[in-house]
Image (tube, rainbow, N blue to C red; front, side, top):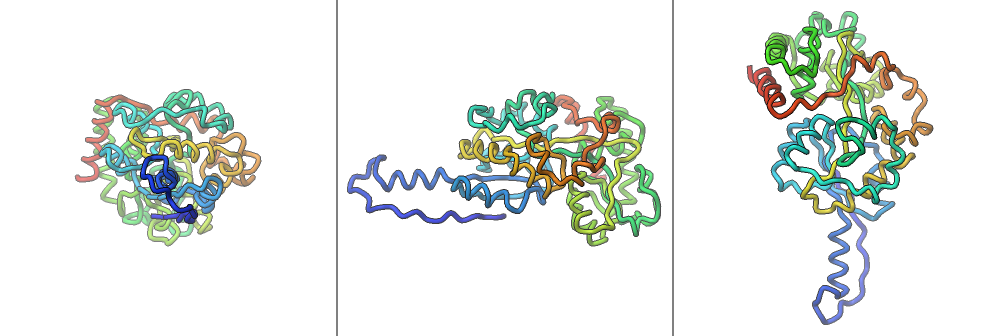
Length: 352
């Protein structure tokens, strides 16, 4: 956890009355208000984002990390986590909404909302940004070691390469992991067909024998050479590539998924006003560009584009062509019953 201390403010001697209008009471209320509890993915923020926000607002940030949507959902659903901002992926947003776990955004507190690209304002997961604002977006594909993989990586057949045996991973997310199996078998990664979902689970059980592990934390294992092939989120692959030139990323010939990670405010957030201030801060052009340049994911912020590294903007793996995007659909909301079927299939993969 990263904790940013707030400098103490001097206050005069408190009046003798102890009512709510006393200086002591006002100072205590101010101290209580200048807080933000933020729950985000590991390795998913710029170095200066939180210090810059604190400097701009005086708000003290408590920052915690998670590694999977499931881990994050369990905490938020408990109702006692105390977070003001969390960053679920788009398919989990729908789950949160079905469970009544979020509060709507106050657009009057978000003047920088105008900076969003049209695609992310009209997206069907939350048309009009009623409950969410995009943090970053990317694709799922294959990250690998160019020197150690021992063959071409153009699709999921790379898991059969001898050098990948026991040194490969798939993502620890039900829909992302299952999508690999579905795409490999020629199915729609958003299928609702029970037989296709079962087929994908059985394929992944077979593939599991060749893997090192199932994990979403791939940056350090890739850069250290521990892992030679990983189903990965594009931004994680690009962060690893920044550290080691030996790391490369491919969008599989079979396809993958596009996803958006989103800033949302839990229904029971203790500092919702401060959460709005942070969302508007990250929607600023300079802050949004710094975030994208650091995490190496696609930015949803149109105003930030002129400030983003040109090599990042020109990279077709970061910003795929319209033709490629057709093979990289967003994860659709399939409804509670079908999502439960995916969850059961994924449990079978992980425990089988």
